[in-house]
Image (cartoon, rainbow, N blue to C red; front, side, top):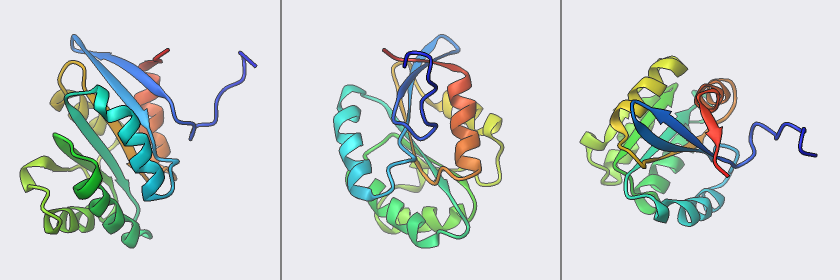
Amino acid sequence: MYNVKPDPGALRVYEIKEDGKHLYFVNAMAANDPDSTRIIWERLAKNYAYRVVLINCRADRVERSKQLARLCATCLPADYYVVTGYLTKVFIKHAMACNIPRTKLIDMGGSSPAEIYTKVTSIAVDGSLIFAIGNIVVLGHEIVSYFVSRAAEDG
């Protein structure tokens, strides 16, 4: 069992050491419903004073993007929301309508996993939680893989 690789969607916490900062990355993209995402957030986020939510959107899941915007506005208070993937403006517009300030929303639509990683780690402070939600298919998986490849699993 010790040698088995976990499912890429498995919920895990990874520590990233970047530019002298210890950052904690959580892949919650496999939580397919708002309640599961909220429960995971409530269990983890209280341990971190600074939080970055990383949201991956898909062009064929517009309603899901709106649902995620409502979830962020009502249940996932963060210092920043980094929006990736496709049709990111749908998420941003809906998040602003739900009273998330535009200054907290960073549009990384069309960006590569490397560009997203660089942006997220640059805005995070030592001890930050980076909480990834949204769609894991294709780009989401690539983003998670990029972050995980630079991290060590946290205990």
